[in-house]
Image (cartoon, rainbow, N blue to C red; front, side, top):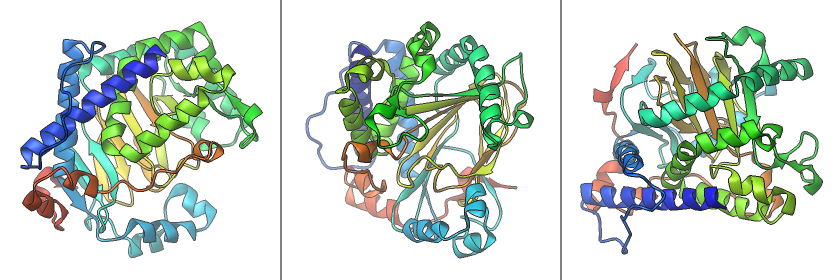
Length: 388
C-alpha cells in the first residue's frame, strides 16, 4: 500500500497548507493544531510545487464568479431535455432560463471558481497551475504507452459508433494519437451491480502499465490532494470506496498501487472534443481535466457558464462533466489530456454515502467574518476577464 499511503500523506499536507494560508490571508479564527511539517515522501522540489498549487487554489476560492441561477433548478431542467439534446448539452431554452455569466463569452485569465446563486461551487478554472516538472512526467509517461493509445482507439471505433473514438477527431502529432481508459476497479460493461463484474483495466496488469503508474504517482497524488481541498466530501467518499475495494482479494494489489483517489482516468492524445455531456459521472462530483504537452494554444469552453478557459500546458479544470456542457478545440502541437473521475455506480454498490454539492461554506468557516461576507456578495470582478 505504499502508493496509497504516500498519496494520503501528500493530500493531508496540502490540506494543512491550504487551511493555514487561507486563514492567514483572511484573518480567520484559530485553527486546531495542524502539522505543516513536510512528509518524508515529499522532496524539497515537490514541496515548492505543492505550495505553488495551494497558492492557486487559495486565489480561486477568494475570487469567485457568481452565476445568477440555482444549480439544483438547472439540474432538474436539464433532466427534462430530450436525450439527444442533453447528450450534446445544447438547448437554447435551457440557456434562456439559466443564462451564462455575461452576454458574451469571456476568457478566464487567472485561477477562479464559478459559483451558483446559493454558493454551490460549479467549477474551478485553474490556468497553468500544474508545475512544469510534473507536466513533463505526465508527457513522458504518455509517450511510453503511445502504441496502446492508438490500438485502443481503433478497437473502440470498431465496437462502438460513439464520436469519442472517431478517427476524424484525432490529429496525430509525432505519431501519437489515441485514447485509453484506466481503472484499478470498475464494472465491466453490462455487469454493473454484479461483484463478479469488477475488473482491473488490462493495461494496469502489464509491465507497461506498472511503469506508467510509477512515472505518474506524484501527479496522481497531487490531483488527490487538490480534490481534498476542492471537495472534501467527495474525497472522503472516494477514499472510503478504495478501502472497500481493497477488501476484495483480487483487487487489493491494483487498488493499492493506483496513484490517485479518483477511481478512473482517461488519457486522450491529440483529439478535438465537441460540446458534450458525460454519462457515467455525477452532477455533484468533480472531474479533473489536466492538459500537458508541447503545444502552446488551445481553448476549453464551459458552455452553460459562458467561459472560455485558455488551455495551455499545466491547466486544470475541475467541474462535473455530467452537469456542464464542455468542449476543447484543436491544439497547435501535441496535447495529452488526463481526465481523473469517478463513475457513479461504484459508491452505491458499497452502500457509501454519496457526496453532495461543494459549497463556499466550507471555506468561509476558515475566514474572518468580514472576509466571509465579502466572498458571498454577488459581484462581477472583470479585471481577470477578457471579452471576445
